[in-house]
Image (cartoon, rainbow, N blue to C red; front, side, top):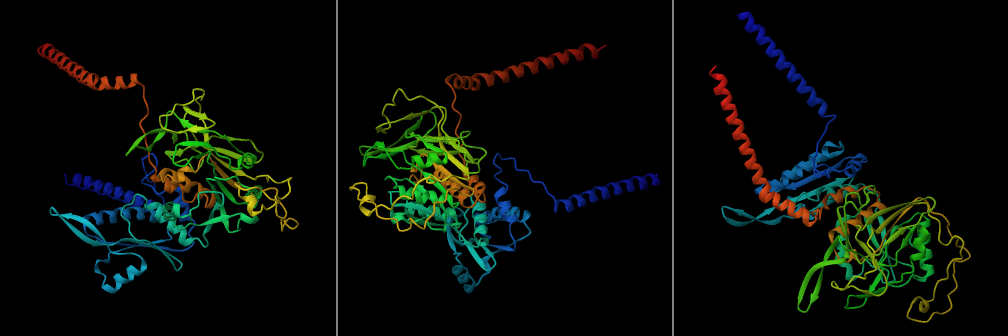
Length: 545
């Protein structure tokens, strides 16, 4: 008996030792090779591939120091959430040094040093024992690299923290920021204009210093400055001169990237009446591979709402001219749109891709099959009748072009620089001024590998809609920085509208819930009752034998 106990005890100890050894081995291997499962559709709780790529390129230690108070409970919860995010970062890089500091024990000198650094002590409202109180807390993060330091002064949630962290890491580790230029001089959208300061601030905040924003003027035959990496031509209101188009063409030929946001209409002041708008860009863009439709689109199925003034009241109602792009009408192969779920394009025209040798054209966004095209003089009132001859079909509204482009001016003379009077379309033209560089300047006829994006409207920039700003920033990122930040920002873009169903489907679901579910419960109960009754009879019959 004693031997059996010793034998069984030895077997148990051996089994426990084996299990313990397996666990130790698994834990050891997991520190080197690990698997994480995120079951959300867009991998919301896993750092994106873009972040992993940024972390892989680090060539030196990046120090991330969090300054979070541990009290009250609301701040402590945010602190834990931030730690979870940073633990995920730390798991994918050995070049991160992450420190958590509680400034509660800091003296006045250390707190003043934090303020100079850019991390303030903020006040938050706290409900404690059924009483509202004000607490002074710290909720900041510092990112340092090779003597450079950037600050996230107040982190109130982790909703957009990955984008802010990764973009800041990219900022401190990038030696020189690239320049994004906005074309001016033809009534375009200009971020430096006082009327667009709100958009400028939003762009500065979301761009996180990854690129500089500047204005680009081509007046007097000026070329686009060499420092400009990406040129934005947004909302041209006056036709561009041939010389201005030439300078844009040569900018692209030397490898510059360009975004063309072309409005198809011009609204009459104070009304919703509009006329077709001539920008002079049609022939240039068609030569590159994107043909403008010279029309206005509406979508009878997917469209957004708009605000309208009716007397003294502001009314919000569906507006078919605010075309709404939803999945699956985005390109799932292109990094600009493959994680977008919604995009509203107000007053947009259609685009058509024109096959060009060496150019890859990708339609980025399309209307639903209920898209319609109208032309002529436009009455854009919400209740205005739609022309009966407008056929329903799917229209492309945004295109990305990539490859080696041929110059529009390859077999042409360099256009003259217009005189100041002839540059104004409201005045009579005078003889063109002589071109001072005509003899020395040589037209570049083919570009290096580069990219162009064309969209049938610029109005989404002025509407301040988050989906439009994110689409624009995705486009700028792709052209200027590649895919470095696109996948991160798109984590925060979510819109999941219910699928439209017919009246028959609605009634079926309705009566299934009202009658069907209770009926299923009754049938299940009766079936269970009869089965139990049958089993009881079976036992009584055969059990007594």
